[in-house]
Structures are given as C-alpha cells and as structure tokens.
Image 1 (cartoon, rainbow, N blue to C red):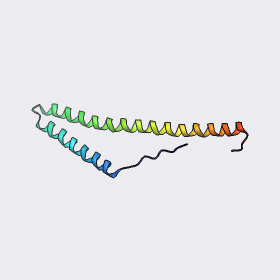
Image 2 (image 1 turned 180 degrees about the horizontal axis):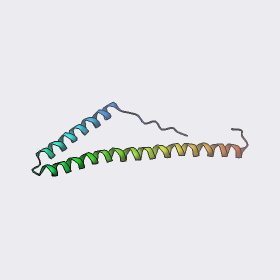
Image 3 (image 1 turned 90 degrees about the horizontal axis):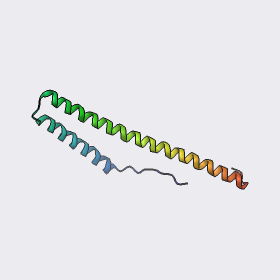
Image 4 (image 1 turned 180 degrees about the vertical axis):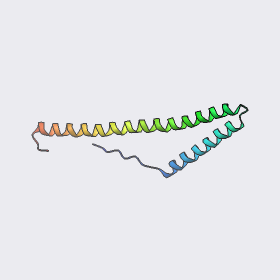
Length: 92
C-alpha cells in the first residue's frame, strides 16, 4: 500500500497569493471605475466577495471529501489485507 503525501511548494504558494492579490485589486478597480450607481457597485462588490468565499469553501469541501475517501480506502485496504492473511492461515 502506498501512502500519499502532497509536497508543498513555497513558490506555488507565493504565486497563488500574489495572483489572488492582483485579481482582487483588478476587481476592486473595475468596480470602482464602473459608471454605475453606488448600489450597483455595491451589488457587484458583494457578488465578488461571495464568489471568492464560495470558491474557497468549494475547494475545501472537495479536498475534505478526497481526504476522507483516501482514509476510507486505507481502512478498506487494511481490512482486505487482514482478511487475506486470516484466509491464508497467517496470524495478523
């Protein structure tokens, strides 16, 4: 059974943070320079914030699901190995 350990790259993390900051500044600048009423700008700003939040929540939910399935698969693999060991007459 192989174990999966994701490698964390500092360069990738830095790139992600910088790109998020650039996108947030560009979105804020676009909303600020938009020729619309204050309420329309507020609507777009709230929509942008909600989109960022739901994107983070969705990615966390998908990651949690994948990790839970990975743990479940490890438990199933261990049970299968134990069952095979018992069936072959070896002690666990």
